[in-house]
Length: 133
Image (cartoon, rainbow, N blue to C red; front, side, top):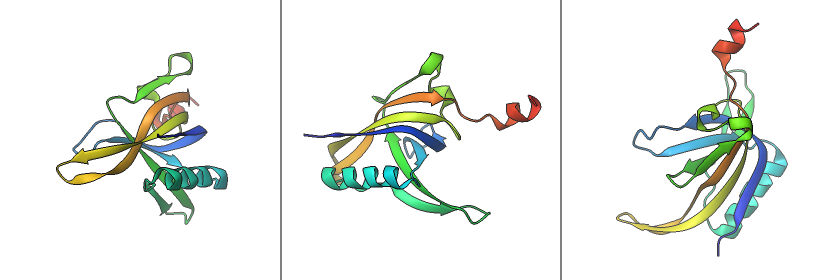
């Protein structure tokens, strides 16, 4: 039986909401040791490989990134009417991740995807924030 990984108030770094042949996903900042530990511990217990990597930006700051697949079954909602269009860089979300077993033409295994995403704060709109000042 699958358990769920619940992450609260995590920062979205990137979102790919249109499937361009590789599926849909969001990438969150997992640099906080508590968030990283929760992801690693849950992944080990569930037998799934966490899609985590380190990214170093041009300023030399390293961020741990965790990518979460979205499926057609992923529920997306938010506070005060926020939703999928507010997912993007700078959004603050709560997310539930579930593991699942798969079998396809490439083989069998275990993976994970987002069961639900709740948008707490919308993405940062860099264009609007510049002209709103």
